[in-house]
Length: 334
Image (cartoon, rainbow, N blue to C red; front, top):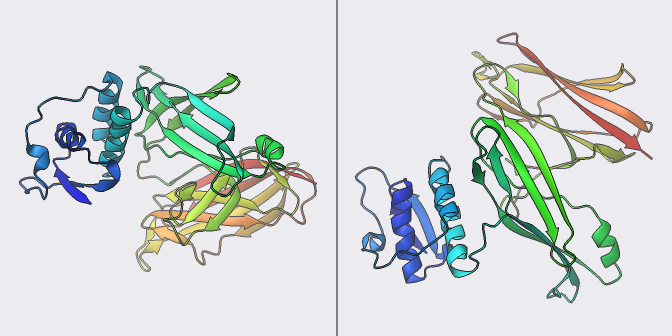
């Protein structure tokens, strides 16, 4: 593994990346480190003059310059990985389409595979329409020949985390089956809030799976901190299935005696406009990071009759006296 120290700018990364490409160094063989001002590099190969620059699409250069301005140190590895694939594997990597392949190649276990691949997600601002992100990932699942028909109909969840500054955005998702040519497109607008100093919270997420994760290296899919949170997008649960409730609280007041956040949280279950259950948060085993609190709870649905419900999470900051309420609706079916 080579460690490359770079000045944390687009130009610093670009010079190092050009030299690594020329030497044929794959992304998995490189570790990137942001050098402090005046610090000497541990690997000076990237300072050598480049005899001929590798040509890449202007689109990639624009995206790379924007990504270089982010704060996440992992951005240099991601950029080099994309650059490597653009130059060595697929010049059309950034073209905007997603692909879905069923009845894929045989898995090493002998089972047939169903493969879902995604490419060309475009996230644009609603004001200027400027593209600021994309992704390409491949997800596979296996099924026997007997299970394949059912597997094609089965719903699957996929997640991609994209760090964004506060603002309004739109994501355009195009899915195309490369076998049949069938395609579908979705346009979804959303806002990334800017949190100040007042009491605030994330969205209230109703989850189909909510569990503690000990081996965080196994998979980053749907991982938020030390919790795996797979959202239930339909909001429908079969009776008996636990209803996962996940939310984060920001800017909680700090009790100067205990030096811990001092917040009261109450969960209220509502049906037909009437409150049928109210439970306080007991905070045992709760995750707190400074002024941020994480709420993660499972609601037992075995005693709930089929029908429509809503859950309210009521928060009161004991220090500032501020209040907030987040609500989400769900349905119980037999």
